[in-house]
Image (cartoon, rainbow, N blue to C red):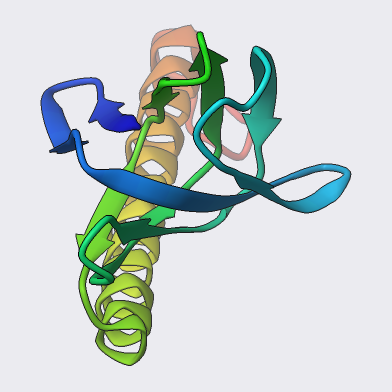
Length: 139
């Protein structure tokens, strides 16, 4: 089988010698072998696992995605974010570190956004004050 995993900006994995694939959707984990019937499913955040014809194993962590099986010979996965790896333990550490870094960035962006929002509100309130009147309301 051929396995193609893509994210919005790159081809993450493209292999033509796949013997078996393991994936996970809302209903649970499932396997795909050559000759599998056509399938379209939405993946949950999980790790795809596959075995090459020579027995090598590989993995790819996905943060949701769409998996399609066409003609029993082609499996495509489109995802917003994918992290490939050959060692499952190492992949776990890489993914956790990446997700933590992204959370930290999201937090600092949120804090900066709130700071700018509050600054804008203060300026609007200041501009709405009548001329000659202080914040306490007395002339």
